[in-house]
Image (cartoon, rainbow, N blue to C red; front, side, top):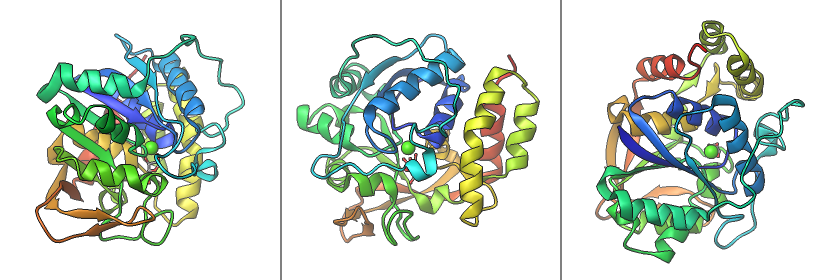
Length: 302
Ligand code: RIB
Ligand code: CA
């Protein structure tokens, strides 16, 4: 079992990545930390508890709330894609049970890094604010982690927020810069790869039809918004940005990796730079194998 800590800003594709993680026996989801990104951090945290109540993974992970905004600029959220509540603004989510007080995400990340060290894989699916704050709190902790796998960046392809910047790195460029400068075992899964991870609507429908029930119905309901918007943008289905990053943490052979030195521009652009590599970047994707893995694990028969 691979112990993982998932830092996330759910978000429709984050939710699908969490469900993939909980459906993967190779992973032990030790903890989930939330960060402001797609939605404010309080909304992201509520969504984690909504998804826990829906999926009921055993044992449940620790949950900690993280940064309410980027290190050095105002928060930019993405309600146009994810909805105001981050999960497609469905009218009928039950109010999830949740502790009245939550641990702090940065402390939990530092503790997990020092406790599990090389055994831990840290998967970052939102802006890297919490990781940058963990480096500030304890510079020696994150470098102990076996792998840091982050969805973010656009290296040789256009961005999805500005012509050159991808959303997670655009929201907090300062955090992305600090994480890239920290000497971590960093595997980046940028738009160059995730735009190849396109799930046709028919594939999702067929998979959910094999496991009818409340979980399948809820996945169908919130993911429909992602299909609609990505289709309208010209894609042949929904782009599974965060699920691909989670899958690359689970099975690194799903993508081809290129060691690269990246520099972060003022708007979160990821530019190739001269010098020693500071990360690996996912390039080619075994899309068919990834989609089979994703659909096999997303929604187990109840
Ligand atoms: O650019 C895609 C990334 O931004 C994904 O993580 C998505 O959830 C949004 O956070
Ligand atoms: Ca995300």
